[in-house]
Image (cartoon, rainbow, N blue to C red; front, side):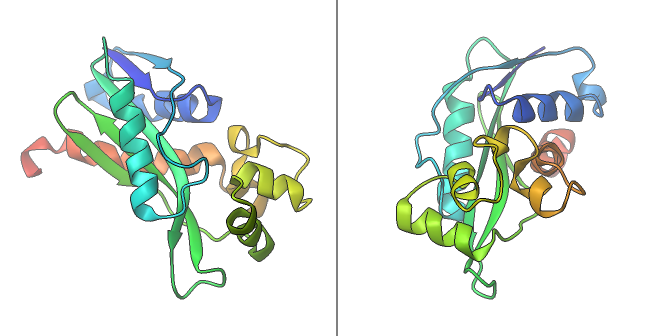
Amino acid sequence: MIIHVASINPVKVEAVKEVLREYTMFSIYEVIGVETDSGVSPQPKSLEETIQGAINRAGAVFNTCDYSFGIESGLMAVSQSKTGKMDFCACAIYDGKEFHLGLSCAFEFPIKVTSLIHKEGIDANEAFYRCGLTSDRKIGSSQGAIGLLTKGRISRKEYTSQSIRMALIHLENKDLY
């Protein structure tokens, strides 16, 4: 079985590999990271835009494979939060006919990070760097903002894995969907 992950980000590719080991329906498989564009802004700023980015990614790399995984992190409106936005991860799995969606937990970026993202139109990597919260300009390819803010208690890979597991609910329980 061939699985395409619509990214070469090592965190996303490794998350898919690790999660699939938990499922007997994926007993023999090869996971291949494929660079592709999300077709949305570099920092999605709504639930809809983030999910669309994951769908776009999965659809774009579905060729010569059995399943493709699109993974996109973005912000969504949460009116009761301090900044009005929370970050989450969306996973879209495409089987050639249907998309199967899952979301991760959500958390809030620091106020100055969210403000900079909106004022400057930059992504979270750059915003965390410019705010002096990290020296890693590609924090999303390592521990992620969630790893930084939870002081390592939850990693970017774990947060990404949550969305993958949630999308796999549809495939593991086909008779219910």
